[in-house]
Image (cartoon, rainbow, N blue to C red):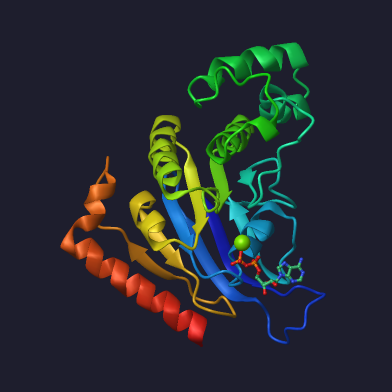
Length: 252
Ligand code: ADP
Ligand code: MG
């Protein structure tokens, strides 16, 4: 569904002398949930900025369903690292933004979104403002907005990293349900090994900089899964290996 071919990239206004991303290849297949795991500052968010077209690669090409586009912004659902909810809009009006941008009348868009709010655990909060919401609820509004973009490929950049551990777990479980139900393809950025293992079919590890080969780990768990599955000895070993790899990357 998504292919990186020989992508190289360097920020123009930056002290680095070597590129941040160098000759990178990557493949994402339809229906997969893939985590991109790496320490902060390693270039994970930049990968999403390249996919959306917010940054242009210096070399190589990015294909969606086999085609190269100038920008994928309207074709993929992008949930950036900070939730970009508009503080002056209600939950309902924040969520319906993608429909409004498509030219759907506000009244019609409201009707459509109202039907979904319950499923997203937001009923009763339709007319509240983002400042009234808990962190988990804000992320659900952002996610709903991302879903309403209608895109099949969703790019989620550390959506749960600011949440407390218990809320994070229930959001992870909820994300898996939504992913299964809606048959989306998801690329999920995280620096949390447990989160990557619990959610993903495959984990791509950012190998220090320049980002060149993403080491790939297949998660040996079926679905549906529970968080207890991570206590399996094989998973504990894998978790150790992943942590070790990430540490090595940081200390290099
Ligand atoms: P991550 O998401 O893994 O934390 P980023 O992709 O945000 O990493 O950043 C990778 C590197 O690129 C960092 O060293 C960061 O300082 C640098 N960087 C990020 N955005 C910009 C920018 N707009 N201009 C210059 N350098 C940037
Ligand atoms: Mg980032």
